[in-house]
Every structure is written in C-alpha cells, then in structure tokens.
Amino acid sequence: VQLQASGGGLVQAGGSLRLSCAASGRTFSSYAVGWFRQAPGKEREFVAAIRWDGGVTYYADSVKGRFTISRDNAKNTVYLQMNSLKPEDTAVYYCAGRGNGLGPFALSSADFGSWGQGTLVTVSS
Image 1: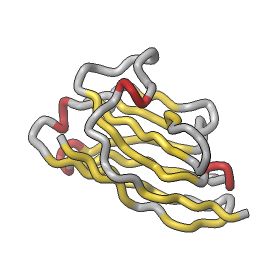
Image 2: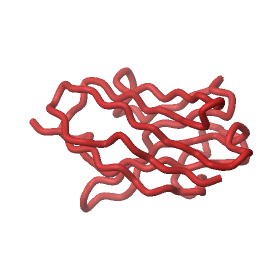
Image 3: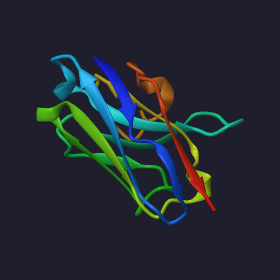
Image 4: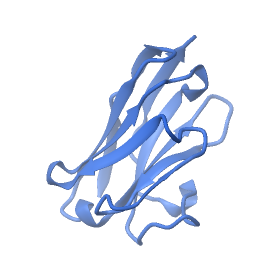
C-alpha cells in the first residue's frame, strides 16, 4: 500500500486543521495506519494510530483530547482532526501503514512501513 499525507498549512494557535492520508492499493482496509510527526532538530514521534476497522485508536499523551484519528475505508483515507493547535505542534506530519495488527507496544516509527511524503503543519503563536 502507498500512502500520501495532505492538508497541512499555516494556522494560528487555537485553530484547527484536518490532515488526510490517502492510500492506494486494494489491501488498505486491512492495514492499521499511524500518524507521526517530526519537528526541526527532533526525532520523529508517534501521534496517533487506528486499527484496520477503526475500532481501536491510540494517541500520544501530548495530543489526547485535542486530536482525533478516523478512517473511511470506502474512500481509502485516514484523517487526523487537529483542534486547539499549539506552536509545539509545528512539524512535518507523516502517515504510515502497518499490516500486522495494532497494539500499545507497537507504536514506534520502526513498527510501521509504507511511509508517504509528509505534510507541513505550522502553528503560529
């Protein structure tokens, strides 16, 4: 499966953005999908993930209550709704797939493959 993130942009603190992760390939509906981000000078970090059927989701503590991950398998798309954005959310956001299930101990970037190009989110103060 190939993934492509989009929807980034410039937003003021407190604002919202919705990112999309569009997938190609007939097996997308069987993949878990994760969102990760990488700020300048920092390592890539986990943001959120969703199981193949949308029935299980995980979030980083830093985004809980502000971000929501969802998916529409009919559209081969996973979304990341980001509300109450903060300057520290500024980063390049990536989506990636995982074909071997999803669990709380498999949420690092090394546990995901099929990385797409990222989309830049900039939050101004």
